[in-house]
Image 1 (cartoon, rainbow, N blue to C red):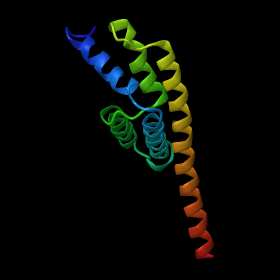
Image 2: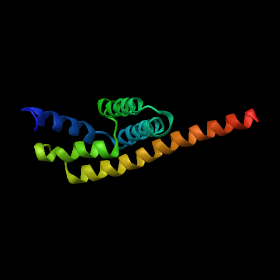
Image 3: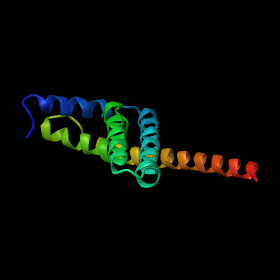
Amino acid sequence: MLRPGASDAVVRVARHIADYSLGTSFLSALVAGALMTVMTWFVEGAAESLGVRIVMAWIVGSLLVLGSFNHAVVGTIELFYAPRFGGDIGWDQIATNLGTSIAGNLVGGLLLVTFARSAQALGASRAS
């Protein structure tokens, strides 16, 4: 399914993610979690139009991939395919990245939700 030479790109992307330090991996996952939370707000609640929902999903998905943000699903899939194409990514690296990205995604999403809800509550209390 992949064009000739694509396996090199797959391995290069996986190597980029695998070479993140633990702190970089976590911060990247934090941003990915925040991006996914924003997308969820638009897709599930803020947008009435199917077109807007699709565009928001594409924008956030593109930002995740192009920004090399460490999303638990996207990053793990990228790492998972590297050994198949000759990359020297070990299962320990895949498992470590999965744990770090899950933690960062949760913190990023929850921090954004907590911040937004707190700001809404503060604004509502001042309006009363």
